[in-house]
Image 1: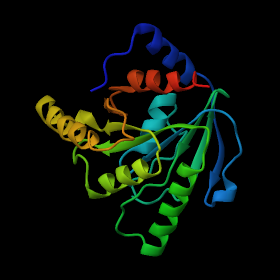
Image 2: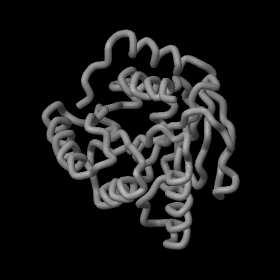
Image 3: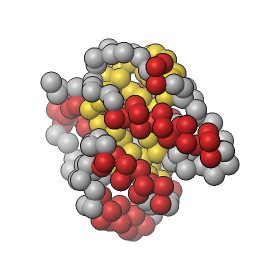
Length: 213
């Protein structure tokens, strides 16, 4: 798990995510992606892993990113500007069986064309459902990110659904898998959008990325 950031870093994260966060654009095609030089963080994960809920929790807004109980509903990359300091990109979910293979392939092509071609992308946040641990599609995406040389932060979601011992076992399994992937950040962040667990820590991690040149 991630070491507890210093108080100064936690405060920087709180102040950054207290800024106004506005929706910029939804992009269903590569040419629709907004041009910007601001540092950017992308959120990616399996359908229904909790990406939109996490974005809402980070920004303290209940309806900034649309939350759906229907996996596969998000079909665009949705871009948000956080206080004109950081761009947040909510990517379509992967791995949902009930969409057509053609549609799934189109989403995958869009996602990875974006990830490979975005020079201001500081990090990808790869969300893993803590109740299931890393599944086959997650490991495949980790491999794709490795090959694209895209640095990614592993974040467990919905940790409030697990007992302490269960969470430790899932975290250990994910850490073991991450050790086999060159682009994976070595520390995990365990979060609950519902209870607020890990949200200050993840804010601090992401705020630090705005300092990169």
